[in-house]
Amino acid sequence: MNWWHIAFEIINYILLGYALMLISGNIFIGLYSIGEIKKYLRKNSYTNYRLLARSTQLPGISILAPAYNEGANIIENVRSLLSIHYNNLEVVIINDGSKDDSIEKLMEVYDLYKTDLFVNEQLDTKPIKGVYKSRNLIYSKLIVVDKENGGKADALNVGVNIAKHDYVVCIDVDCILEQDALLKLVKPFMESPDKRVIATGGVVRIANGCEISNGRLLKIHLPDQFLPRVQTLEYIRAFLLGRMAWSRLDGLLLISGAFGAFDKEIVIKCGGYNHNTVGEDMELIVRMRRHMEEASLPYKVAFIPDPLCWTEAPASFKILGRQRNRWTRGTIETLKFHKIMFFNPKYGLMGMLSYPYWFFFEFLAPLVEFFGFFILIGMTLLGYFTWTYVITLFVFMYSFGVLFSVFAILMEVITYNQYKSRKDILNLIATAFIEPVIFHPFVVWCVVQGNIDFLRKKNSWGEMTRAGFTKKKEAT
Image 1 (cartoon, rainbow, N blue to C red):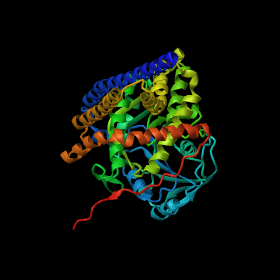
Image 2 (image 1 turned 180 degrees about the vertical axis):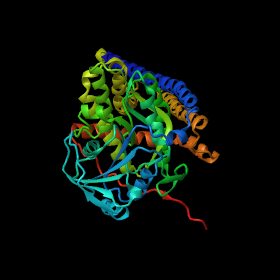
Image 3 (image 1 turned 60 degrees about the vertical axis):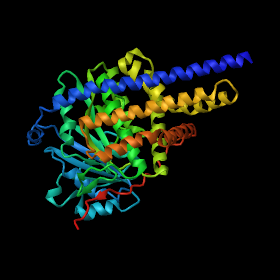
Image 4 (image 1 turned 90 degrees about the vertical axis):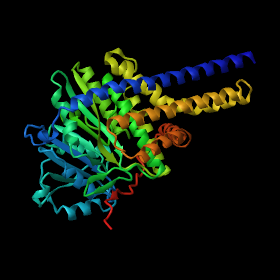
């Protein structure tokens, strides 16, 4: 019995030590992000984006937007992309074998015709059925590609092959961009003389409940539904705190697949997007960074805290579960593909800090939490712990989670303040109190299922049904 008691004590100390490291890491990330945000806001205050928008010296950008069964939003989203303030721009929509009426809508609304555009197939992809342009000169920036279904990675590789510019911006076609989004996203590529910027990303926000018309964001509202609202809080925490801190450390391993800019030459040298993972966005960034490290080339992955992109979040537990399951499998696959970097000093900070952090606190944390919960309850039922101890521990963890979320909300209010009404802010704070007992346990369970599906070698994306954006309210 003494051996059992010693074993349980060791497990207890391991769980407590892990929890303290996780909490300490979050506190560091939250505080460390402040300096980077202040630095960016101060520097950005001197930039005249109206003047920059008129410049003919801006580098060329090709927007790549894969579309699969996006008929609910496709026309409005393409309008949004075409209306962006940027001189040297092309918009490439890649219809990835959609089963709905996406391509028919595009053909009709934009008066498309089939062209003989040469495609430089530097990356292997599924066959292209046709490349289309508009007869209307107003839409001269638009290129529509119709191809056989091959998944998002394959569609993006087709876009890279077709793109004529040196920088590609990969975006989910259901996203709505701020008018100056590309100007802000391209600025890091022009500002780094000593290091080659290989990728940049910006903040992604939740568009559910916002008023949108003709592809433009008219008015920002906090979502009425619980799931989109709690994801709004989650995104504020992840982007405004987490990614800003990692950007300051120069150890960022992830730029959202919803919106990111890449150096096309490096993308091609690295072989493009990987077809063998459902987490192609993270895997590409890690592979690009690994390429630069192995070639001993000075480089940088930049991140800016401006809310540049608005996307529709899952509003049902079923669709959300599929998304988080896929994110989990993508993380595991990326960590597996690049396991050589684990605590490998050859890869510098990425190998010694970024990769280990993702392994221990992004991949393992939900598993430790899930199994730790049942171990703790089991040990209490066996009499090794008192219920007072367990309840105190849960209250402490709950309180820390709420305080960290409230801190993120405070940072949002004093920086970009997208949700200006007091009611929205109070609703966000109220959501912070509810999240740990409803949303967080569900996400943890999705991660556990994602690990099980990974072991079962499941590699499908799963259907991600879109409800469509809120239109502008009609005057009465």
